[in-house]
Length: 277
Image (cartoon, rainbow, N blue to C red):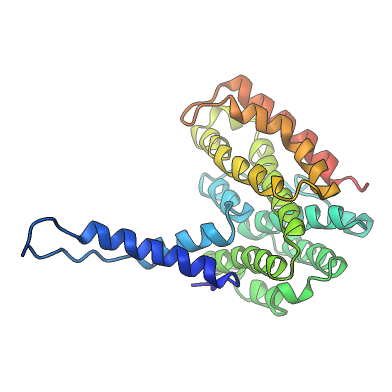
């Protein structure tokens, strides 16, 4: 299980988990033996990861699309050549998240050359942000070596999100980490809403889009902590219409009109994000 650099936060969370399970094991009847409840490793790992990186990564969203056999579209992702035009911290941070989403998209669908291209684009963003130390140096080689092993790819790329997030927060660059998350979330939603013309007729696709309501609320909450930062303030404004759309959606139901609104707004936001300021 990946260890967070925010040790006390994770330690407190694990303590709360253990206390919670301990209370479930307790009994009010004197002398009655308490039952042993096994805590699954995956369950604790999930709780810790929610603390470390509080949003589903774009890799997890793309995995859902892959499972329902949505086809790969080559020109859907951001063009890796665009990496050279991003020069401001905001543009590089947001597009690091976007290229991370595209890397997830290409690697999940086993698009080998596209995967290499997005690794190169992501590296340029990392270099521009002085974040080379945030990601393991052998990640490209590890991805290439495990390109036919989906489970290994999940661990490698998803963990790279956690590593970057941890590094930024540990080095007092939390605002940058929030921008990376914003870019990754928008790209995941954009891919989900534009991967097929049949999106609105697919129950699975509708469910994926509906489930983005809570992550968006978390994202807006995170961004609001750094609203004094100009780039963050602009990003909050960019996402405000989408947040309003989702606020009017029930947790278990969504209308076709709302689906269309989300698709159109994700396209609008994403166009702005990938255009250099």
